[in-house]
Image (tube, rainbow, N blue to C red; front, top):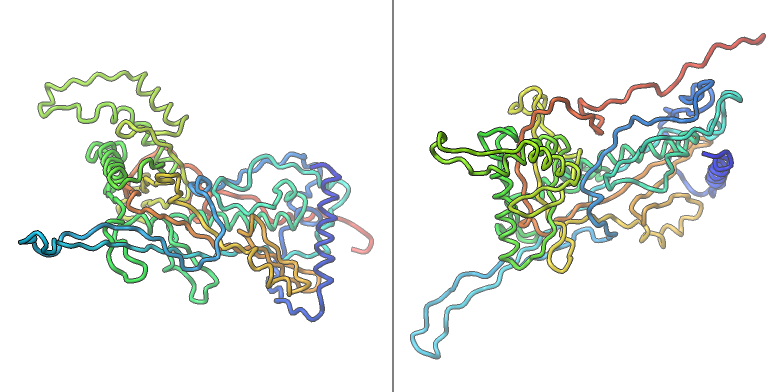
Length: 480
């Protein structure tokens, strides 16, 4: 970052501090109770205040990637929506007419309503001391550091308006990045495993129903709890078999899943439908290693194995494998589909699932509709639009709370004397309008040579390291 850019940001921070200190005396603020002060970037104990530190700072932070950025996202203020489906027509009721003017058999039209719920997640910064943010250790403590690497992932849950480049030199920006990173992690997990069963009673923390709870059987009407089996998803269990083994054939499972759902979409007049296959990165890596061979030889063997001859060209198999990995597509039943990798999909290990052996992992493969006929989005995100509160909030003169991302994220400031904290919150949900056009294959096992690093801090494959405080060097003076 150039020096003038740093000065400009410092000036903006100073304006923020001035505005906070100038609040009306009649405004009662929540006390700042977290006295664990923010990580110092520069000055005494600063993690970047080492003398002679080079300007380039390389990031080793592994961030989430996933499905959400491929979904449209819309603002909303509807707490309890309804999404209707015409589920069909009953069989004939009554008898065939005996005479021409007698009543013929009759029937009824049936429908089912689905619903959705917002989650609510917030994350706070550490306490920031205004009288420390501008300090540096000495002239050799440079504030022109440049970041190489990305701190935010391609997860679809990033609170923008934060400049990671500035975060290396400005404590307030770094604390906001820190809170946003932790918020991104939890929301990325909720996309799949979110469940209102985990909500806090007081409503301070709520999970929106994730896709594992929506791509499911047992769908019911939102108003009467009546079963709606025509909206059930297609769920298959691979029973922890290895994706490349022979006990169960992954080609058979994925082909049948696609064929069933594709046929249903055709028979219900939903075509054309845009589907994507979604899975964890390492499951995709292992699947592509054997898919070309399995797909190109599917059902080639006869009952008499001695009479079965299948000729394979190793170079063609490798070419197909590499094409799949580079293009991120897969051919199923002669149709080519995009593949999305999501490292927030739940993964079973021998530590959390007795069905998984050490060194082996298991997760699900998803087949998700994005749009149906007419381009209608059927899998998408919504968020509470905080901009709609502007009229009410305008009456609270002196507050510096603000929103970003079209009202998707709300930032609040708590202050006590010269200390302040920021808290970011968001209320979002994922909506699947056509669960009957979605499916998943559960418990697909894979045994990679080496597991990738994981973005979730509670994973055994999460790695960070380093320090949050550096010990000041020895100094001498007559008054010490």
